[in-house]
Structures are given as structure tokens and as C-alpha cells.
Image (cartoon, helix red, strand yellow):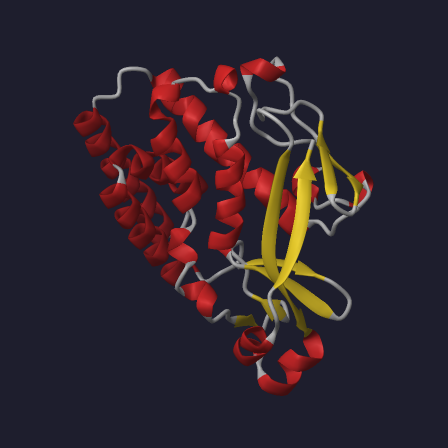
Length: 251
């Protein structure tokens, strides 16, 4: 679950819904900016499915007593989270081995410096999976694979940008993840950071756009009232909250 706290409510976005926005971004990527375009279908599939591991846990979000807010993807308990990660990657590999490889690399990157035993074990297992898939697929160009992973991460971050920031948020008040631009670098942008900025309640400007044309997306979310959570608990309050929609155009 992606969580953004307001004074009286939590804005909650299901991970798989956010991933569908990421998919739209990958699908609209300019062909002349798409290195290794022969694998575009597999890349778009990877972007679309990269958070499918969260489909089940997001159906019933958990309350974090320590932080007094719902658990998010950033602080979700480690053991079940890594089990969900593995299950999700397993499913994607079955759909498309190359898409599965990209998702394994994506999730593995989160744990490469892990200090916990379960974190280290996850990273080792995914490294072994990656080596197996690389041999099976016969990857000949690491540059292409690196670009596709970078594209996945950029599309992931772009969608997170509109989840973690309220529409119209001034640049200086944005989530700290994005105040200095997105971390991914691309040759079409001269290896410089791409910055996003809210122009108004429904429009985000990109300093350099990788898209064929302006990209319009619709993000479903729930605004779960804190008073409701106190009265009936998080899971019930989440179920009872109506689905809302955020319309955003990227320029």
C-alpha cells in the first residue's frame, strides 16, 4: 500500500493500481528513445505486473502501532513482505521470463545491501534466479537490459510521484524522494535528472519528456478518515471508503 498522510485522513493507493499508471508510461515511451524495442511487450508487461506481489496483502491493509498509520510498502514487516516479493516474481516469470528477470532485478536491488538474514537470503536467491534466467534467455547485450530496468524504475517513480504528492504541491514541499528529480538517467536527457513539477491540480510538467505525446492517466485511491479507523479499525474503514479518482496529465 502507498500511504500519504493528510490532517484528517490517509490517502491509500493499492500497489497494483499504481503499477497500471507505470504501465501507461512505459506504453507511451517514444520509440526512438526505446533501446531494445524488440522487447517492448515484455518490458511493458514487467512494468504492469511489477507490484502484483501486493495484490493480496493490499486487500486488507495492516495498522502500524509504532507509527500510528497504515503499513506502507516501505515499512511493511520484512518476513511476509519478502515472501510476497518471491511469489510475485515467480508468477511474472511464468508469464514472461524476460519480464520476470526485470522484476527480479528490480526487487533484488532493494536488498543488495541487506544486513538481516532474511534480506541476505532473498538477495542470494534472486541472484541465482537471475543467473538462471540470463542463461535461458541468452542475454547478449547488458546495455539493453540495464536500459529496460532503468525504464521500469523511472515509470515506477513517475507513478509514485502522483501518489505521494497531493495535486498542486509546490516543488519545495514535495516528497523528499523527488525534490532533486528522478534518480534514473537516460542518454536522451544527456544523463541529467528529469524533474517533475505540478503546474496545477491536474497537470505535471516534466523537464524532459520521454513520451510520444502528453500522457493522461487516472489513479484510483481511497481517502480513509482517521476517525473511522479509530471507530471500526483500519481494515473495515478501508473497505467502507469509496474509491476516488485522480486525473493527471503529464506534459
